[in-house]
Image (cartoon, rainbow, N blue to C red):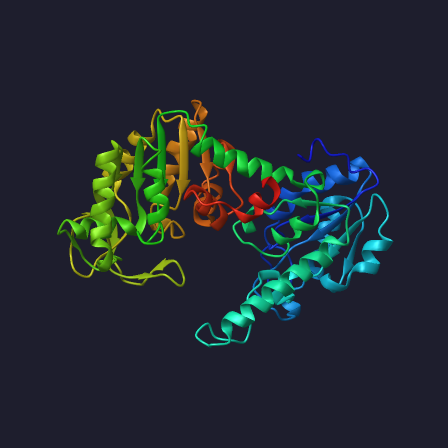
Length: 422
């Protein structure tokens, strides 16, 4: 069942959204992208003549009530965006009366799901090394089912529209689906777009397929890299992981970030790429600095900036972005691509002194998109890059899910999708 085939007239729909929006010290929303992303699904339900019960988490309250993470703070913003008054249930597990009183065309927002440890299904207050942990885990899983059953009792149908949490088997993202038959549970419009976008880059591939993987560590991306090496034509690796590859070949990398215990992994990636006929593209020069403050994303007073070959960086200097030769190399590799996946910046783009690499990648992706490529941008930093450089409307799709997108790319089954599709 898809949401477009379903008629919500006379139905109460409980919808899992991702309203984990950033708030300032006054509890005001600083970026409403996630709220706007859920509107098509919520408005479809109301337009059909149904009622909507909205549920989400916010932050990490770890199973305890935290007023600073209350969804009550965003009720008015959700109401304004949705165009109808939104009622608020201050306890998501005790909202039976509020749900029962809901009339067609009305909306109800439940309090933060993660105020209850049952949402995530993890025992709290007990260490994993404790002999009693396994028994506590088993008990919590049963409690999680009961919590999901309570949430399901509020509605006639269930819609999963939170791609950002689709990789978690939580009560509201997967377990709840067990309490609805196949004709009354479905993916929302945002989820369908996300799943389709991932399918476009992993299954419905138009070649050449170019993937750009950034990030500081090889270890955090190795599963994704290995999966991509069986699919892509070219793989551009950039960001901090560059220096682990340079070091693996005996290069001098100064004070640049490196995983000395992953040098063999880097060499293994190169060997796998060669075996699969994949062109592995690495930066050859770096913009380096003698003093960078990662807490403020700024160059320290008196620090110098200079370009070095990536394998010949002097002591006291740290690589923070790809150099001009690498930028041209990356742009050339992206040119002519028909499918593009970009996850992870090319450098410390938060500081204007080190944005050139990520900007060059973004502009090359935008140019290829204009020439007919399908481009998928995912991961918080990559999305921030695209927005910073004003390229958001020049790429095909920007994913709302960081961890979920990475696990999907890695080839893992997402519980939030599997619970609907079976």
